Length: 403
Ligand SMILES: Cc1cc2nc3c(=O)[nH]c(=O)nc-3n(C[C@H](O)[C@H](O)[C@H](O)COP(=O)(O)OP(=O)(O)OC[C@H]3O[C@@H](n4cnc5c(N)ncnc54)[C@H](O)[C@@H]3O)c2cc1C
Image (cartoon, rainbow, N blue to C red; front, side):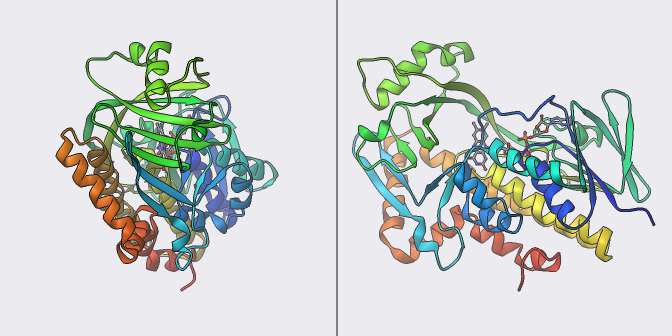
């Protein structure tokens, strides 16, 4: 009987975590990454408590903490009035081993896992290996690379991002919507906490003219601003725009140093199915979300752990394949009813156009923060602990959690 073998497409955070889950269960993994080296673009930087709880078993959390920042609180602010509602994640200590958000760029998790793969006999990583298509066969799946080569394994896990070649090759729909506003992200090393009183590491800031999100990462403040139809990408990315926007947050006489800037379109889309025969979709290949609330990558890592363990259980422990289909359907339901719902709510409450709706959204946040019971329930939701609870039985079934 040949050793079970799985191909993972894409060495982003989701593909790397899926590879680690499979390798830990003795499955041989070939991880195919299109880029010549690990992409280090600045994208997700927030890991939620539920995700850290799931990752703990894979021995990466201490290294992530050492390369990131622990954020025990986050805040809703009004640009003029300051803090409106502050949430203390340490009150979740009864529900999680990690009662905080970890501010750590997603590529650092990939680096940590790839360092481990270099020493593992189970994972072979191939950079510069672009997957063009996946083809189902009986009890196996084949990938065709852009080079023309083909490779066959027991399963293919597609974590090849939002433009997934695998998803397209299967002819799956990716229905949903695109927001009108694009988001501009600008990073600076100027210490904004010296000027804004009681600034948390994660802040959602309401304003009649321009809302924003302010996030701390190691060495930088990252500001995210909406960009309307009237402004082109190049205008929004200009020095003038970055200086104007940051000066609107904290006015300065000296110009801000701009360490990094990017603009992107924001979508909510979910693939028709997450599992087709022996091909399984994970992460952005399966669902893309508004980044407000930071659930896209986190949800993708939950896919990787749930479905990676499920595939391993089919190959190693004789789990009936219909259970894998059930687990994939559950992840799809959570992508729609949990991640999409909460990230859309976050976006609409922060971006409310009229003053009355904005005030209502802030009042709701203040009421939640003031009432311990409401606050606990809200924190469980935004920390994705409720999402974990909703797949608890399935995680126990595939050995990721003990009852
Ligand atoms: C500015 C910004 C901020 C964000 N902040 C957060 C946050 O704080 N928290 C959060 O949870 N989410 C956040 N997100 C979303 C998050 O970045 C994504 O959900 C996450 O990157 C998805 O991971 P992934 O591994 O599925 O896909 P990706 O990170 O896109 O990785 C896909 C990998 O596959 C490779 N690839 C692509 N095509 C192929 C191919 N054909 N063959 C082989 N390899 C291929 C790519 O090179 C890449 O390495 C943010 C997004 C943005 C843009």
